Image 1 (cartoon, rainbow, N blue to C red):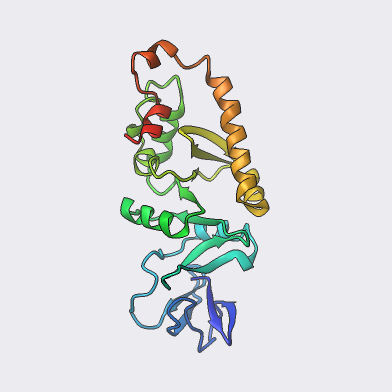
Image 2: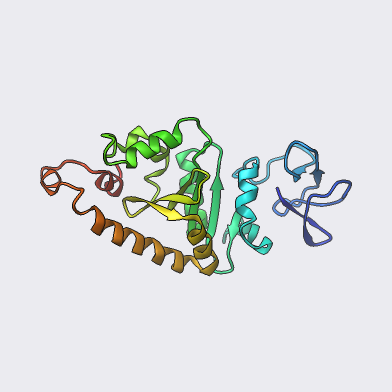
Amino acid sequence: MKFALYGGERVEAEANLKGAVCQVCKAEVIAKCGNIKIHHWAHKSKRKCDHWWENETQWHRDWKNQFSKDWQEIVHTSETGEGHIADIKTPKGLVVEFQHSPIKPEEILARNTFYKNIIWIVDGKRRKYDEKKFKEVIDPTSGAWEFWYYSPLLRDWSRIQKPIFFDFGGPKLYVVFEGEIKDFDKVDFIEGVKMGGKTLTYLLKEKVKIAKIKDEYRRNPINEKKGKRTFASVIKRGY
């Protein structure tokens, strides 16, 4: 965790700072400020807290730092009292989750249901061949573009009915939205989040609308009539 509570205030990990507690379970945490891992807070004892939390990488930290500290690691509490730490939660209630580690479909669904207004950023560099296979699928000349299951990233993430952005470390993200896969400037994404979820959704819809016009000549309407499944039709139908 980047933040813990100390004297009622959210603070970052500092060496020799004692008495800080977890934002969720209020158990004591200790500062880990070594030279190898990024500085963070860890629970002093092995107890269950937020089971959705994953060990943070530099990739997580770099993404979080694109936004105000007041938006980072915010505890979101449901009507039943269940609490989880959202990676980013804006004042307008938009949650952005950064996912590096493997995650089960049931947990993705649980987070979507819990947060409702949520967008995912997925680390596309975790596995060796993810980027290569993903880009082969989106390349209309590769022969793999209609076989979405060829890409493990798309196989894992394309059915969850929320905007998914894949980050391969460059200036552009790739978004799965309304059955389409399109590139999206990272700067535009960050500004869209800062301006509010509706602004980002508008930018996504405009991107897809323009892309559909451009793709009209690439797609084969005869194949569609015969029932040949394009990537978009597969994602929209959920199989």
